[in-house]
Length: 443
Image (cartoon, rainbow, N blue to C red; front, side):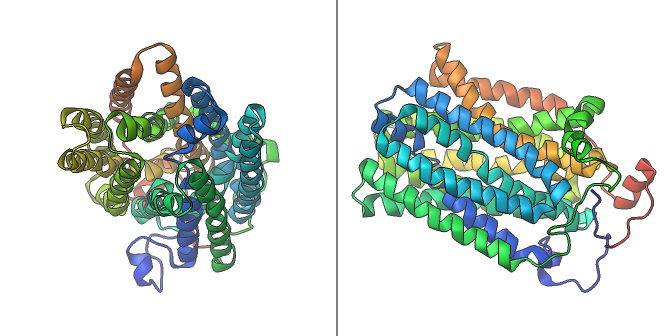
């Protein structure tokens, strides 16, 4: 896969200039609406399953970790299959998978069947990465190299805008409107199906771009070669392997906090479920506001430097603040809650410092961008598996929630070291010269 856009595209619109390819504008909106539906349950799914099935926390953590494993696998397939079939077909597949297994998951909860809940929730995990990350590959194809960072930033504005920000806001309105408790949560998840359908329809019929159903991989490569290219590249290129691990660590704490914080904020510290959902909205709304900003900062200040200091170091500090500040203020107090929200917003803001990784990964392998993006999307989806897996492991070891937080800080320390090796040219001409590649033509 090559980045089809030249460095100075003709007939630029305002959206092009701010980093959103005009031809993909409706796709960005579709991702936002789709991920809002997908993110509706993100901040109550663990306690919901516990309450409906009467399951212990460790068992539910395992179910959520299996869901995240499916997301990891699908995240790799989103890049590989987009190379093979074109991004639109992969997005459609993701939509169908999500709808079918969401319906079956909700029915399984009503039946009270633990095995069926585990199986259907696992399979639904394949849905959103195929939809969202296939579109991220599409962005990489269309966007001029010099604006890759900010374009990826806008993608994460939409992605994080839905999961968990607007999704939590939707839940915050739906749950009390339908009686609260598990009944209101079930109604919120049922309503989320409509959002996912609308998001898909916007992206499917709003985007008319030539690469939609076009094979992106070289024509002389077999299907098996295309699908396995990312894995082979990771073993052959140490920088790709390190970039994969850095992106994997990036948002792992976000998904880990979804497991441990709902009960801590709502129950242990006495602020209630609505306060936790409100906190989530503020924390990730902050992230939305600065995703594109950090993409632009990376394009100017340096992708690696932005990731290392703003993303890795900054997120580690923000995570510690988000955990320790709520425990330092009076439990249940109004002013303490808002101070805790502000601490969480520090984490949400600096988490956006990782945005330039979406530009670094394809630049690390300019002759195999499709394979590199497959590993990037794998890591993006795998972050959910790592985050929930760390929670399950640390809790099983008896180290408690504090142990979970410090495990993530240690992972950020590892990422800080690895990012030091990921410097790449940010000038498209220099990158082509380094790779020995000819001048890219506009397709």
